Image (cartoon, rainbow, N blue to C red; front, side, top):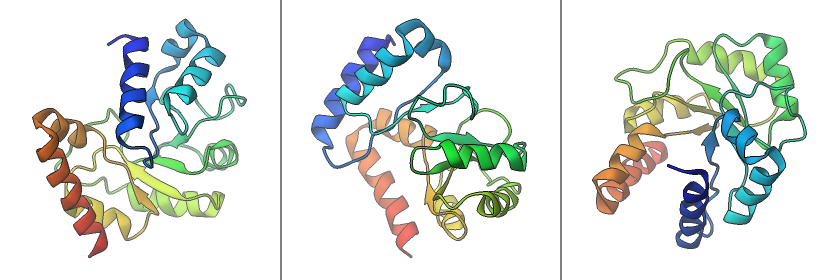
Length: 176
């Protein structure tokens, strides 16, 4: 995947889903190579509502509008700073490690939500490892939102109908 191709996919997705917030997740090396301001402008022009830069800690590049991530290993001070600098909501990383579908929710998530609620008033969305409707429902009991990435991509690769069915199953679980 090349940066311009990604921006083109973002623009085409924006045309198909005009009301859906699209927030691409990337790494700082890509923004460094493309140009920080150029990428932010190009992503916004392509339809991005914000950005997630997975390896850019709160406090670095405070001028870059983005959703901040915090993990179970984040200090309370880091959570507070991320809450102050985030673009609308705080992304709670449920596990220490890489993203991907998992069979179980992290037992550390409830404690992270509790710590984050003491540090910030922005909405808290949990992601990384959430892959089943049951996971989504369980997370919704204590977080304000659910982020599903890897499993949704797997469903999309299987086809639009598979993705629609998968998203509908998440919606049903969240509404129950």
